[in-house]
Length: 469
Image 1 (cartoon, rainbow, N blue to C red):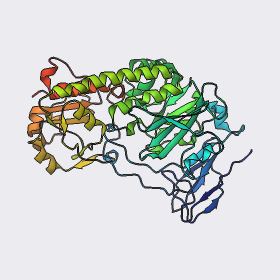
Image 2: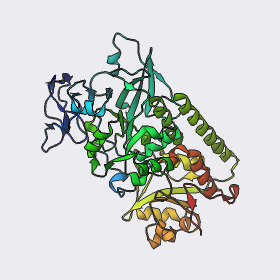
Image 3: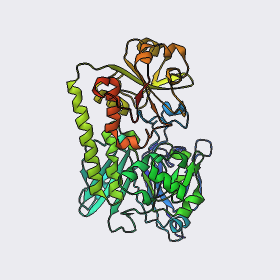
Image 4: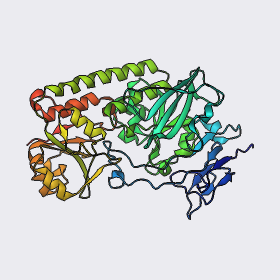
């Protein structure tokens, strides 16, 4: 079997092994030659490389040190209740790699993959690949900042950016309608989606049948996908303990849609046909909705995706414009709690933007952070009697009253903002992590009716609702 080796000249003093969460580099620099199927941290300071379940060989360009993930809300939240309104912790920057084309590779044969080129930015200048060719030109987005379409003549590609923005490229994917061996086979017809959040984008584009596998099927809320689960057309390929590789192989998808956060905890990074999705890093609600255009391009329905997004944008802008007629903006705090600890999204977050656009004033609007803000109980107790509303995100299967909302703490339950202005988003009963991403206008309407009830007489909230006094 032909073997592919890395040839990458790293700067003096750089670590010499693959820079991936869960792997540390060795000492020194210079020319590195590594034959890699998969890297994993096995202990000590040096990376131990081990072969993984059958997969295509990859070229790994070493040269960037591993960084410890940033501590954030996710380390303190229950695993079953992810917090969508802040940011996920930073992960180490991915290494630069190219999928090999080995006809003897079991993974490629089993998955039937046309090879993906996630040329992840790592070593060398990003424009080096355009030497001798025309330069790639970016196509600007309206709101989304973590993906970009680029064109070069007849070629098309899409870039995906990680937690640090445009300097942190986690994937470059070439695609064209007539797919070749080094392009995504657009339109995609058989995919696995590891995050149920992303199913909403497929549903909005009428592409339910293009998804053959996902994770945590009991959490699927969209009736169309739920029917597919019951009929056996949509299989579960992943649980909390990782990806079921044998089941994934049996499904033979063209592409696996994954997300950069926590890659080392799953088994999907051993598969060649992986496309990263980072919509959760978008700070603006319309930025998350605009990711429908990303999926539309890969599913071959770009015009439909553009139309879907423009309709969402129009509805949102109409509602946002109504705040100019308001005479007062109530003071609002949104938070979550776990084991007595409280957390709040920063002022540059998704939820803070929604609150301000709905005619409220988020109390931490001036704060800027990559993750949630730790909110000491003492500070919450001081704030609680000076603000108008406290909103809480939780997952509760039964009825929720004020005591349940605040985790049973009587001191918090007595606060004015709880007694007179409490509201909640319940992910156990409402699709806050899925459908809400493509209905930011409905979320905005819910919040507006909570903050200014006189403008929405009799309306029942779809994703957020007030707790009766």
